Amino acid sequence: MLTFYYAPNTCALASHLALEHARADYRAERVSFATQQQRSAQYLRINPKGRVPALVTERGVLTETPAILQYVAQTHPQAALAPLDDAFELARMNAFNSYLCSTVHVAHAHRMRGSRWADNAAAQEAMKKKVPQSVGECFELIEREFFAGPWVLGARYSVSDMYLFTLANWLEADGVDPARFPQVAAHRERMRADAVVQKVLAVQQA
Image (cartoon, rainbow, N blue to C red; front, side, top):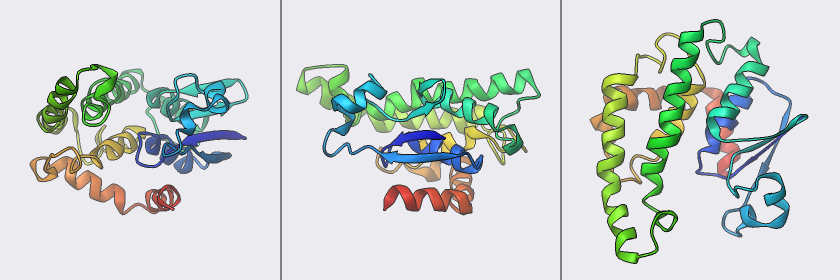
């Protein structure tokens, strides 16, 4: 059995959705950020980065959302969560997921994690003020260039949809109006109507 470590309102939602969609044999363990559990000696033995998600497999621990998403898709091919039969489409999926991880999520993190990049309070505040612009520009690019519709890869539903949904849920908190991105906004509503998504959200928000 897999063991999945997550915290509510984090990017771990995407991996949680993938595990549930794949009907994987897993148990979910909540990590309390409020009590700094992610920095406890016990959790750091699992994930030295002190972050979520983390997925404990029989071969070791996986971290980072793009890696976990591909692992779940490849180990559960019957769920058809990735274009495993098409090298180009699989690479395109990973390119999209990598953009979300390396650029969109980082832009978002400047709102509350400025201390990762600067010690000066004024610099941190400047980063925070930039978030509506930087996150907005990321989603403009997704809307214009990277979203095939009705799903990220076009007609084929994939783990990229779970990842996009996760980050799109943060738009309002980042000071960005989702109405600027009709395709992304419609995608978010389609995802929210999904029974599996509703189940996982209920677990994470409990």
